[in-house]
Every structure is written in structure tokens, then in C-alpha cells.
Image 1 (spheres, rainbow, N blue to C red):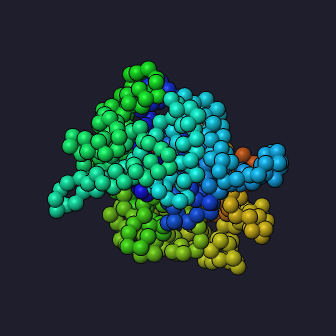
Image 2: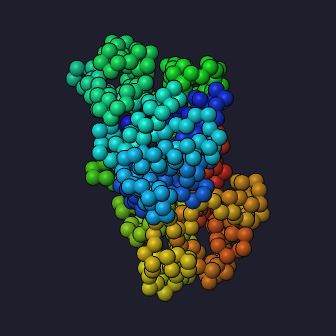
Image 3: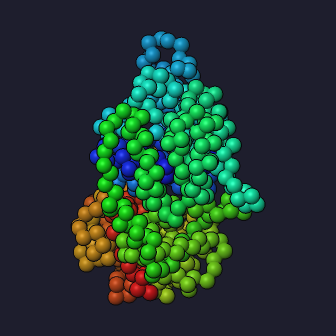
Length: 523
């Protein structure tokens, strides 16, 4: 089911196998008909993660990159929409030689072709493939059929792992195995039998439950691996390795046993569990609400980037969600983050939070839209531009300090929205003496983008004259990539047009997040 931990399980297995000297890559298969994740609202499907090549994809790709410590690309993403599009384009180009093109076998065969493409590109020894959704759903049957066909063709090279959930009733305090048993039977109906079951539960699995699952699901007891809740997702590889998962995988794939080297992960997990000093960060956003519940997945990479930087500085991060539509007292926060987003809803609340951070000297980090709103706030309050705004918020604003990129305007008029923003990795030149230059320790950086609007060049000189520093610019000097206030005026006030959270890794925190947390710990 959604949120049970398939993505973290996949990423963790990748980390373990990589620690054994194997070259590993990962592919996420999503059953939605969207060609990519870019056209979906974050509250609908969680964060949209952007890869180096600009491909907009599921947030699980972020976990893969963070755990494997490598950059992935478009070939690592498969959706129902992209698969059908490939097959239809081939049919239109007569690539099937006049055959009757059918859902089966041509759709599963295209999936297999795409998996092999990812393997070749990354020169992988092992490809980890996560099939999204739940066993038994109509929409992922074709992907399970691809797995069946692949296993039929190369049985010794394909391994099926099922992530099953074991609920626990508080009254009788007993883990229930029946849902996992039924999941296996449903998987069996597609022609697949799991080789290994990861038993997800709130608590570790006991021997009795392992025996029960093994007996009813046709497995060796050693192939039922307990996967309980842990304090940090970065503990999962260590737990699974201790449970013997990697040895069972290597054995079943007829690969020789190998020693793992997880010393670096052991050290950082120790630091995570024993950090005493706290740093409290407020994320001011608008994509939290889903009915009566809070959806933290909408800002998953921001959360992980804050954690990476905090762990690096041996701090325990306390992260609060601050609804921009219902702003609370911000005095308790050591730092404030305003992340990316779209549209005009709750914008004035975000601008109020930015003004508070600027005037009260609270460390502030604005990401993409957060940077644009910081420019608007400064223009209104300091720059004397009382009606400063973005044309995304108010099309007829008389002072458009943020405006749409001309090429983007043309695309929107043509109703071309999917995959058309400024996407992927772009370079930026940094001003010497700036906070950004101090953080990155180099003159040129490359970071990932996802936006349509930019700082309007017509207002740059006026804003600079009032004290706003544009410390990062595109190589041609036209696009403003980073804004900040001098350290003499503020301990840390930085906004980025790009998304630095997308490149943050556990062992290599993004420099701007690192310096932001460092400033916050001094509050």
C-alpha cells in the first residue's frame, strides 16, 4: 500500500548491494497514465522530484539518489503513460512492421526494453525495480506481466520481493499475518511467486509469525525478513543487512557471497540517534492538507536536506509544518524555510513570514517560489514598490518584479504544460564575498531547476541600490539564481531560484542547507 515503505526498501537494498562492491541502479514503475509526475498536484501524489536531465518523476527517485549517492536519469522512470506513448509512437512509425499491436505482449515487452535500457546506461550488475501501487490493482497488472515474462525468460536472474504489511491490534497486541498471506495469493494469481517477503510492521516479527508466513506462502523461513519501524530511514539498510537479506538475495541470484562495508552509514546513524542539541525549523507551505491529515511527502526532499545538514552538524532537527493560510507565532523557530510552489493561494501568509524572518533576523532560506516571494517582500517593504508582485499571482500588476520567461509564455498560450518548465541542471556564477560563494567554496555551481517565472531584469538595479544582493547569476548574467542580504545586515537570508534540496545527500549535505542550519544553531 502507499507509504508502507517500498521506496525505502528498494533504496536500502541498493545501498547494501553497493556496499558489497556491486554496481546497482534502480527503476521506479508508476501505474498512472501521466507521462511524468510534473502535471500532478503535490497533495495528489507527493513531491515532484527533478533529475539532472530535467525529467519530473516520483519522489522515490530522490530516495534512490540519496541512498545510492548517484544521479539517475529519465531511463530510471517508467509510467503507464510513457510506456503507451512509446508503443504508440513506434506503431505510427511502422516499427512493428505492420503487426497488430496489442496490449499484451507489446506493452510488457516495452517495459522490459526500458528496464534493459536503464541497465545498459548505468552498466549495472543489478537493477532494482519498484512497482508502484498495490498487488491486485488493475493498473499495475501489465507491469507484473512484464515481471512474469522476464522471469520466464531468465529465471535465475530475476528475483521477486514482496513488501507485505502486518497490522497490529492494540487490544490483543498481536501481529496479523493474514493481509500478507492474501497479498501473496493475489500475486500468485498474476503468475508470480515471491522469493522473499519483507514483513513491514510497527514492531519486529517473532519466530511464530515468521513460521506462519513461510508455511502459508510457500517460502523458506529464512526468506521472511522482519522490517519494523525504525527511528530514521537511514537505519533500514543496517537492519536489513543484520537480518541477512543481502545474503539471501545473492544466494538466490547465484552470486558469490561478499563482505559489506557500511561503516560510514553506521557512524552517521550513531550520530543521528545520539545528537542532543536540537534545532527547530519551521517550513511555511500550503501543500500539507489532505482531509484531516498532514501530507509531509509534498516537501520530502526539503525535509531530508534539513536532516542531512543537521546530522552533519551533530544536531537533532525538529521540523514543524506552518500552514501559510493559518500562520502561527514564529518566535519558537531557529530558522524558517519557504519552499517552492505554484499559484496565488496563501501567498500573503508566506510573504508575512518572510518579512518576519528578515526583520527579526531569523535565518531564512527561500526555495524557488520562496526566493521570488522574498524579492517581492523586499521590493514592497524596502524598495518602495508598494504594488510589487508576480504576474503569476496578479497578471495586471503595475510593478511586476517577478515575470514569466518569454519562452514559457509562448508554451502556455499553446497549452503545453507538461515537461515545459525550465527543468534540470543549469550553471550559475557566484559573487565573491557572498554567503553563497562561502557556502559552495567555488565560483560556478550547477543546480536543478523547476519554474516558469524569473526576477524581472527591469527592477534589478533598483533592488540592488536598496541593498538586495543578487549573488548568483546565469553565465550570461540575465537570470538571477540567488538573492541574499549581506551578513552585516542579517545572519542568513538567502533565496534560490533553483532547488538545492534535490542535490542534497546524507554524506554530502547541500552547502546552502548546511550554512542555513549552522546559522540557525547560533540563534
